Image (cartoon, rainbow, N blue to C red; front, side):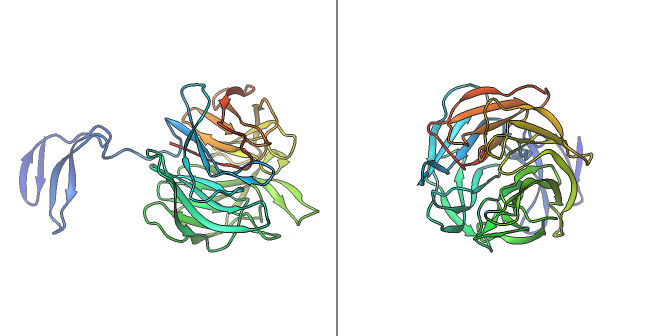
Length: 336
């Protein structure tokens, strides 16, 4: 093909970004050049992972906190392995996934202390995670939704106050979170979901300790604008502490409360009440959620170490997908 750059013509072939070849590049002086790049230089971002799920932190029994990051394969049913350690071993954290790192955001310990840590670990290195910033408000029991640039932290609990605030954490530059509007309703222990342009937070609790009220509401907010979320529907069952997974077209909420096995499915393109999508094998609450391109995975939760998976495309009971290396309760989930 013939290409004109800076008023001169050149011959060459431009390939798609995910196959490598010559790519158009702007030099520091503003001129444009064609430059050869490797086939791994441009890999389109996808929230769903293709390789592994990760279940991080939480506690193992009683108030014993864990710093362990478990990694399990999406392609083979084997016991998870200890991948690395978190910077801080907390529970009730939310999990965010960039294309290269997993994030653990906010936390609590077993002694009434709450933390505003933003920490991350590498998907490709077993080095101990690092502290990269702080939330503007100390909180725990949140959920996260992600796009290519940010993790968005939804709701949560500060002392005994249930929050509606949204905060976003940058993947490209380490630092503190910034405000991104509010949910339509306060939410403690919601599930988070990620579409291409929108984040969702569903279910959870409102009220106060001793008189908690379960929710079914699904809130939706734009990644691109700092505005209040809107109520776009409901889950089929009110509950708190369900696990959220996301396909490219739907959100899936599984388990929750102390006795739920329900898997709900709702569309990102059409708003309304979620539909039943089968059941988990066991009751699970405060489990980690990891999203592959074809299946959702729940890890730990309810003082178990089991991993269950369910298909996005078929409404059937989940299947056993091995075990975490240890019992993990209230961990956070990510994927790569």
